[in-house]
Amino acid sequence: MSMPSEGRSDVVSEERRVRGDVVAPVQDAVSVNEEAWVPARLLPYRRERYVAVAVHATVEILEGPRIVHVPGGARHCHRLVRWRGRWLALLELDKLLQTHPSVDSAQPRPVLVVAYQPAPGHPVEHAALELPALPGTVLVSDAMACELPSDHALWPELALSCFTHEGEAVPVLDVARLFTRNPGPHA
Image 1 (cartoon, helix red, strand yellow):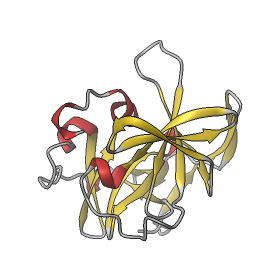
Image 2 (tube, one colour):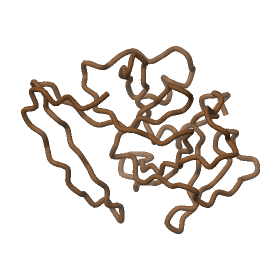
Image 3 (cartoon, one colour):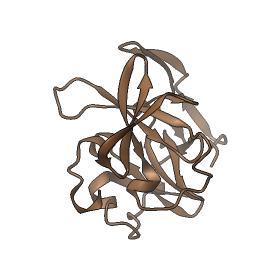
């Protein structure tokens, strides 16, 4: 989906904002014909299927980072990735959602560093998501809201909301829930 261009009445310009030591481009909401559009980061987790996260939660894409295996870790989060002198938990969305990767797992896959606040008043933490392909960005409006898909039991636990993109439901994940939840029987 591309950004609507007809009837654009107000666009907040892109600027650079500093959060700690992270400098990232930020684009705020766009108003089109009195409807607000906000950017969301589309993350593939299997062929033609996506989840989304808030753009402000995404920090950096890593290609070929140093990754180490953690014995005894959960099936979907059993490795750590080196980022800016720190080791971050590396979660594999396709394994968490019990899907099969759409690319050869022997090939390096992109890693997206994300930021989240585990609870109000707590400091921001970082973790990483291994993806089968590079993430994208889409503009979303309230008119695109839809029900969560029923194809996975974790959606109600992990998703804040859901929208339709290219005819498919896209759950909007709460990044903090991904890394602070009790894995229960889905681990």
